[in-house]
Image: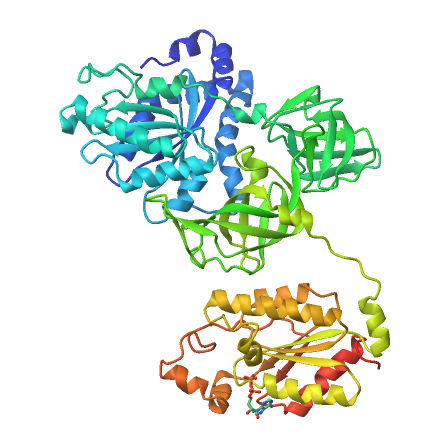
Length: 634
Ligand code: ADP
């Protein structure tokens, strides 16, 4: 293949100019272990090596004359693709490789095909313009081929190259190729994929990689390199309505208030009418500011700072939209969720959800179905495990601006973060807002929690006892209720076992069921607190995340977490219900402290050690807290 040394010698400025303005194609290469993916990528790198070497040498030699701009641009482009994933905290096994020919620059995401395939592929595909799906001509379409095709189409990559590799081992037989092509097109059509180019090749021998192969005279299509160099790059982001998620508010002095971020779609123009979501306020773009001076317009992928004509309230996470075609705003959605963590999804558990530049609290419903990525079947599933994909409803604690993922990858995609560990545990694609969210409103009532408190002569509260079985929660809660009752306080005791006889009769003791158990109790407790009661809740409640959820449902000062602490040996010795003995005999699986974890509270309002303090002392500590918090009169 020709390379650019001539131009470098003749006119370095022209060479650098051409190189800077070459288009960039990002693609993902998918294949099973022995399909020849590494060979193909290796060959591409090798074939383009001379150009790249020359390019580097030229930059080095001419750094004095042209400064570092030429070099900076390329590396920025290369890094550009990586920062998005880095920012999202996904550390994944995807190797990005860069190469360049005279016509185009390329970034290829090389995703290992081992068992972590789903999250690797989702990451690699999320920025790809095209997917190369490798097939071994000897084996034809495999389960993996279908799986990879499903995943890339889900992530929104609609341009496919089916690389039918190892044709040399099949004697370059046209019938073999035709049969594979026909079968693939039929399958791909079911996924809605129509832009498919099938190329017979041998990555090892170089057939149809850069030069048309004499071994396949019957093939009249492009070589692999020719195709990826010339395939039209339709960047749909440019055709979509303008969206600018605000990354940060730049306010160096009182006279300047700029909103910085990257235009993710459409064109931003000075004088353009915009709507800021979720608030819905409208204004007009005053200036588009960059380091190199003001712009008249900025297009998708450009980072800018805008100022608006009016003094409007805009904060980080807001989305500045074209006023005539704004994004939607909602707090409940249906979404595809790709689970990426060893710990399975726990429906009902509060997670963090990040969409665009905004992070909000989120809970998932149990999946409506799980997709069998091999057969595309929908299967019933209570949860999603590592690498599984399903469709769930998601409820957010605040309304967010959004577009359906199919219309905008940036404002329709999200990641899910575990609140305790900060790990990224899932990625998702928003389908649509749930209509029921629009039709349910919170009714304002005239008799309020405050008026009830006045009548009662005390404030409402939730006293939440947590600790191992046998630590003494019920004993202390029972004694506390008697003392409160004697003081004329309106109370109600929610007890773990009692609730499981009725409201939560359908739940067992898996992690998912424990989460749902506590979620329901917290919701019921919240209603009782609203009714003006001092609620005593006695539940092992082993997970910090759900105790925090219960806390966050109430107003500050209403929640009192009591850590009923006893060493496991002490609790096990007491064994008031004989449960530890059963668990030790293996008759009671998932027993907290034995084969299911207990996450101790880090900063409970009251901490009692029942190995050292008796129940009366524990009750006094709680009463003191309730007085200090103003729930009970001093
Ligand atoms: P939990 O509700 O936490 O499962 P229970 O209150 O049902 O625990 O059982 C705790 C057992 O330990 C009871 O038999 C209780 O009499 C005994 N116990 C001994 N010392 C204490 C203490 N300081 N506080 C609470 N319970 C204690």
